[in-house]
Length: 133
Image 1 (cartoon, rainbow, N blue to C red):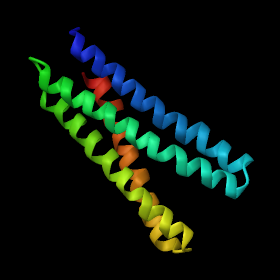
Image 2 (cartoon, one colour):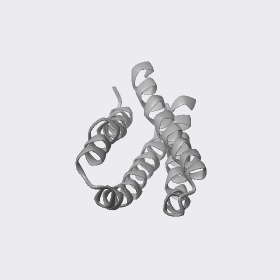
Image 3 (cartoon, rainbow, N blue to C red):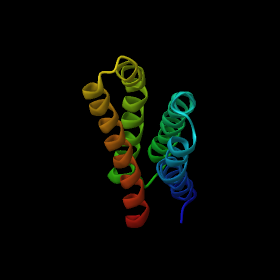
Image 4 (cartoon, rainbow, N blue to C red):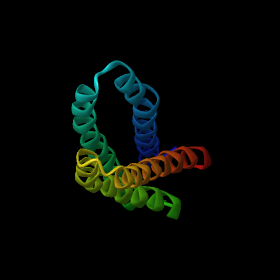
């Protein structure tokens, strides 16, 4: 297996791990064991970092795709989706936080749901790409 693809597999694994850790361990523990004012601080500190890290990993994945002599359209697509969806999620954070603070539950639920959907798409495309490549 070529080195570029091996690094891309590693990047995909890290992205998959980040999403799994956050959704299955971190968030449930935070909401179960911390007071709302404490969990608010944690969530508002961790999500910008998560989306930034996934964005940077997506940039690396995409860059490797363009540098590869044998890059497939699927590699470029995975990289583009990762970069764009993580950036969208990052940019939605202020509006999501504002809607929560203002008690606009309808808007909060919509933005939160969109963020979750985009993140899960990134998760599944990396999982799928890892298995088909």
